[in-house]
Length: 161
Image (cartoon, rainbow, N blue to C red):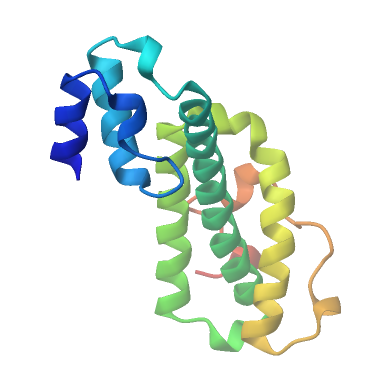
């Protein structure tokens, strides 16, 4: 399909080659080729803009996923100390590393950090309920730690390591 699309592109028929809603992969390849060839009058500008916005949303979701996993494990660490183990410890360390790397690669997300923490913590509470069996009321309604604290590699609630 791509070779067909690109051969049609060479003939100037790119706009009709593929449909964004039916074959995103081929559509993206054709659009990339059109952009590289500077055939701006043939690009699907509306859908390109939509895809670029979606890329940003995807990075935001990844940030929230790292935050959620980290915060959930920190909650479990605090509220189920008898279950602390190497697995939880390694998950906390890993999520911190992923979080720091993601923010290094996407520094613009720092402006969304407070809102992301709020959203991720809400999911982390429910995840902690599901994984621990403890009632929701066990866990604070608001995140009990600031970003600087919970993202610090040396931070372990209650001083435990």
